[in-house]
Length: 327
Image (tube, rainbow, N blue to C red; front, side, top):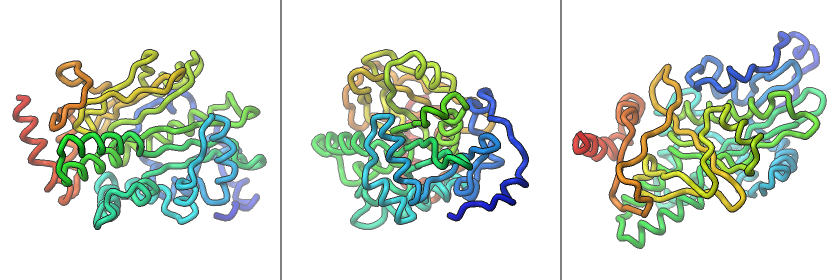
């Protein structure tokens, strides 16, 4: 993508940094949330905009993620270089969750339908904050937690799950849960709302595409705790995690690494609703419980209004039966 001319840059209105209250607001405001906006970028200030990363940005992204102590995987770089990075998310921004599901359905089709090398790039989001004079000064990296999903798949395989059940487990993990792997801003540019803008747009994109859970790990500092709480995340107590049952239909616990803490946000479905905490499953047992599934009250109506025919054919009747069993 070529740089904009200085003339076109001067014609843009001067914009003040996005207020924190707006950055932490619900992702239901989607008037400027399209695939083209994702590529072209959203202004943060007169000189900074947040946009989708391209091949030419990956060296800077690698440097920035290293500041956050995260190694940028070659798979992510290859997906961006091939033009497949975030492709399903772009489709979802333009056509909603149904278009997102249709795009991913093509990836799940065929004998390689459970190969993460095909599944992850379209749902991987690499955003950069670009300064008119200083270039890329910030980045956020997010994608579904492949290692976690594979652990669930292996456990369910040993428990005797069928191929169809394993397929649905992978599909749910890839399409409904995402981990923020890294967010970083150049030290000289911190304190200007750039990190907030990156996080806000990241969670906004995934919420618009129908993701239910956004989570990540952070260093155990009071500053980071305030940062994520201000954006609607729950910062969990030390040495604790969350149960991904609402997405995967399997009871377990996703925990942070030693010395870190988990932050998580459950996105509720429905327009004009503020994000809220999903109720805990009945029973506090966090052991694997094959075949157990519970649903938040908003999820079934959301699937009816947003799900594709192919998706509903697989998921709707089991989910309806579960809701009836729950009363």
